[in-house]
Amino acid sequence: MTKRAKHPVRTTEKSLQVIAELNRLGEARVTTVANELEMGKSAVHNHLSTLEKHGYVVKDPETKTYRLSLKFLDIGGQIRAERDVYKVAEPKVEELAEKSGELVHLVVEEAGKGVYLCRSKGERAVELDTYIGCRHHMHSTAFGKAILSRLPADRVDAIIDQHGLPQVTPQTITSREKLFEELERTRERGFAVDDEERLEGLRCIAAPIKFDSDVIGAISVSGPTARIDDDWESNEFVSELQRTVNVIELNKYNV
Image 1 (cartoon, rainbow, N blue to C red):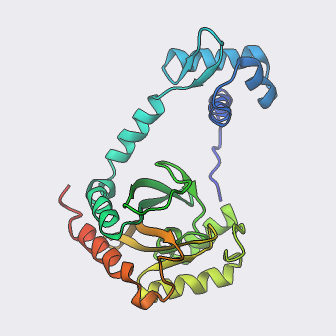
Image 2 (image 1 turned 45 degrees about the vertical axis):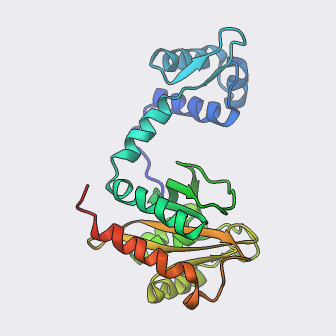
């Protein structure tokens, strides 16, 4: 379940709502944000002015519209750079993409969803709706199932309770029982698969990354069904993926 503050600060909550709405809209004037959030114009103006003062939004002097500033990118970049798994895995993600020719991701779990920390495109990689920082459900992705397979059962249950098991394609697992069965298969073979479960026509394989006994992320390789065979045991990408993860785990202290 999502944690709730015992004594939430209403002003902070309102500012965060303004930020989220501005992110959704791209750019907007005070009136638009106020209408969308059903807040008073003066209150929204105060929030935006404060955020502008501290560099979190910028205002176009001609159109009077506000947008989020690149300060968020600066903060996100610093957060990512401080993650040990990123420091070790980033060059290996590049190498795997070059060898496979496909799209490779480094993903970690946060608040029950997978967050993309790094992506690299091989010479024949498909273009997907993924970008650094974006989040996806865990149950419908290979990286998600790779991570879930190494988490305690009660943690997996909590993630399901929080986010559900929404159907994305006809192949998506939407049953708690079937998901746990798939996670058991994932543990047995050492890697997870996404057989058109998030996007029709796309297959992915992923392996969990463990530092000591803790799962801290996963590496995935994605490509069209025409190039990624569903004969998983003889799949040409599996050995390269597992070798990459092994190198990352062995070099965890070299950061």
